[in-house]
Amino acid sequence: MAAIELERLERRYGERVALGGVSVRLEEGQTLAVLGSNGAGKTTLLRVLAGLLRPHAGSARVLGAALPDERWRLPSQVGYLGHEPLLYRELTGRENLRYHADLHGVPHSRLQTVVTALEIDHRADEPVRDLSKGLIQRFAIARAVLHDPALLLLDEPRANLDPSAAELVEPLIGRSSGRTRVLVTHDVNGALEESDIALGLKAGRPVPVDAELYR
Image (cartoon, rainbow, N blue to C red; front, side):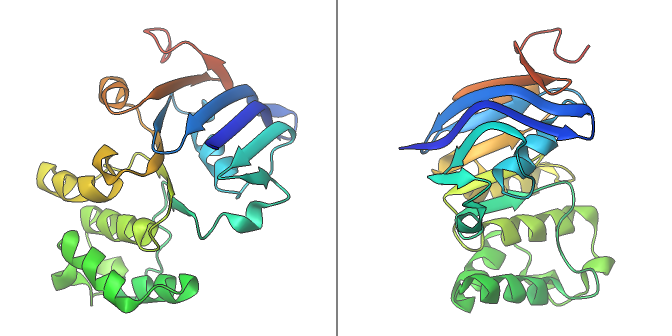
């Protein structure tokens, strides 16, 4: 069974087509790189795959769930890392992760394992509002992988991370994690190196991944 099957997927915002004619098949364990300039539809695609936006036409199946009717099946199977960290700023990092763990029935021992792996234990009891962007990104990654999802939807996952922090997150969200991944990034060369399939988007429509992609 394919992890993701899209057939002429379409999503609109009013009269504007944000995604049009997107078809792709991604097998379990593979990585799909989604490339394109700002406004190309990359984040919209991730949000559709996460079940956060309804497709308006075409068909979409994610981990066997037909969208939008079966999107209720996705939260326990999908880890979503978007532009926003989805953390409560007034809570500490640990409180945020405990809330997420309880939401998914994850034992707190798993929480500690992830916190230790990302080397954020020493700042875990401070309010998120007081943390640097790099630390917030690490806590957001911890939230996204805490429930051990089968599919990771990653929007610029290495944003705000220095080289040492980027190395720390690789076993959890990188290719070596063994998870099925959809990776949105502006780093064309890096994305092509760590992906099995590349999808170029321009004005919401599929285009070849070449030098014209960002023009």
